[in-house]
Each structure stands twice: as structure tokens, then as C-alpha cells.
Length: 346
Ligand code: ATP
Image (cartoon, rainbow, N blue to C red; front, side, top):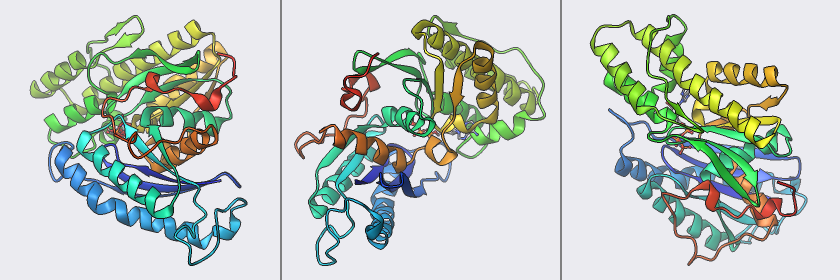
């Protein structure tokens, strides 16, 4: 089976071809880089409109060149509209920025109609989880999604991915980006915080965990105030990482304990951070749990994870009509019927 995946919830205009023969994923992405400040939704949507046709075109060119490798091609007739062997088009239906999602939805509908194949709507956050499950080979892991606009723990129960704990305010990457914007650094701030943190020492900042939920707004205000008062930026960056990743690790451990699960996967762009990975690894080692991190290309936003989950949904019969393909900026992961795991124990 071959799936064309399309992603564009915020900053990454991305297309991918997933081929289940050989489990190969070809990804082409074009990131949006704001001239100043953070992500402007209208500018990001304009970027999607310009970049998506090109990345989709590159992926289809690759698909046409490798069509003979696919075991189950739809056709290899070079005059056919689907000379790429694509079986369905999967796209990010939400959550994300409305103007970006609407552009992605339009691109996906057009591609599915041009290729004459069904459409599959994918929840972007469930895709972050499923690529971790797919790559690790874990059976039923808890997932910590640490991304730009989100931060939550997901676990499988009764045919759904339940939100076990989540941020009560901003997403974890957005919190870091707001701090770096305040001190005048270019977007995205997360990698710059990681680089600066290597030379820092610990200062006291707010640490807010309430049961299974956590909050970043207080720590961000305190970090901005500390910078305004002349505290060393390296110390603030180091301390932001220790406090924020400490909160995420504490709640991840509680999620493992509450669910009785002994497998943890990491998802999302902030998951590329080595300090976060090492804290989670140590916690898992200490409690005898297995821990896995997908390749970096699958952590940040990418269409590869959309295509891989799209293939599972397609195999489970989860295609949608054009009428049902409306995007949803607030699409929560627990709204998704996990049909591809039907029959599995919780
Ligand atoms: P979502 O998946 O919730 O829609 P998103 O669209 O913002 O999030 P992601 O690619 O998951 O995109 O994450 C981007 C975020 O990751 C940015 O906030 C960026 O600062 C952060 N980030 C990237 N690399 C690192 C790093 N090494 N350390 C910390 N944060 C990082």
C-alpha cells in the first residue's frame, strides 16, 4: 500500500509517500520562517499555499520513479492519472492554525480527486503518538507529546487515546518560544534555549504540577522578569529546561504508574531536546520501563507520520467523503475512534 501524506498545521509545509512494502517513508518539507516575532497565522497559511504544491509535486515525482518497487500499485500505466501507485491521500485534519488547516484540506481534496483515490483525515497529535509506536514496535505505550502548541500524555483505553494529563495553558514549545521572543531571539527558540543551557546554573523558578496537569505561564513570566532584571541568560535557559522538563517527566512517570504500562514514547518537536530525552530515559530506567524516541525527522511536524497513520486508518476502512473533510483547529486526540487497534486489549 502507498499513501500520500500532507501536513501543514502550523509551520511545516510537508508531503510524504509511505510505502508499506519495505516500510519506507519519503518526506519533502518546506518550513515557514517568520521575518520577526512568532508564527503569524495568515503568513503561515500563505506559505502553505505557495509551498504545498511544490512538496507534493516532489513526492509524486519520487513515487512515479519508484512505482515498480511497490508491491500493490494501483496502476503503473504512465497515461493514468495515478501513475504513482498511490492508494489514498491522508492529511492533517487538526488540531492546528485554522487558516493553515484550510489550505491543507483544499490541497488534500484536490490531490485525492486528481489521483481518483479516497481521502483519510488524520489527527495530528495521534500521528505524533502513532509514529512512536510504529518505530519502537511497542505494543501499547504511554506517549508524551511535547510539541509547539501542545503538551500532554496519551494512553490507550477502551478504543480511544485518553488524555491522561495536559498543560493547563500554553504548549511547551510555544512557552519556550515566548521567552526567547522576549529576549529578542529569532523563532524557533527551543533549540537556542537548549544550546544556551549547556553553560548555565540553576536558579529558582516556579514549578507547577497539579495532579496529572501542569502549567507553564507562571514560569514563563518569571523567566522574562529574571531576564529583565539582568539574570544571566544561560542560567535562565538551563533552569527553564530543568523545571519544565522536570514537570513533564514527573507527570510521565505518574502516567506510567497509573496505567500500569511499562513503555513510553516521546513525540513532538520539543522531543528533539537531548536534556528532555535524558530525563525521561533515566526515569524509565529507574522504574524498569522501556523508552523510545522516534528519529528527529518524525519528531518535528512532518507528513511522514500523517502518511503512516493514514495507512493504518485506510486499512481499517476509515476513509471520509469530501463533505466530511472539514478541518477542525481544536480536534482533540480523544475524539478519534482508534479503529486500527480494534480488538486489542486496553
Ligand atoms: P504541534 O505539533 O503541537 O502542532 P508545532 O506545530 O509548533 O506543534 P513541532 O514541530 O511539534 O510543531 O514543534 C515545534 C516546537 O519545537 C517549537 O516551539 C520549537 O521551539 C521547539 N523545538 C524544536 N527543537 C527544540 C529543541 N531542541 N529543544 C526544545 N524545543 C525545541
